[in-house]
Length: 113
Image (cartoon, rainbow, N blue to C red):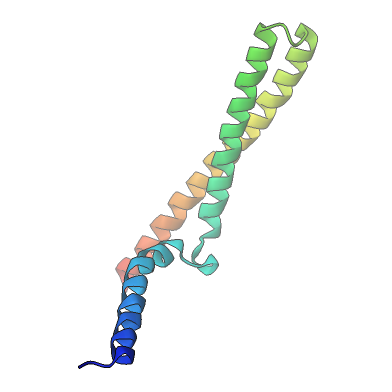
């Protein structure tokens, strides 16, 4: 007869193996903070800012159309938001061009090896 302790040890080992097997993909996909590319993080931040700016413009238009804003306030706020949106979009385009150039240089270096 197999001792109860031996069966318990096998269950614990099996439980650990199953837990590691299930959790490994989760930890692998999370990566570490060192793996985050600063350029990619900047692009994501700018894209998020662009979407927030578009949303703010849409909300502003809706508020004006429903009569919540006067025409003077609407024009002033819309001009400011459009300028901010243009700044964000131009930064996003500049970052994208930089990324393309960096990728080309990286490819050239890898090809020369």
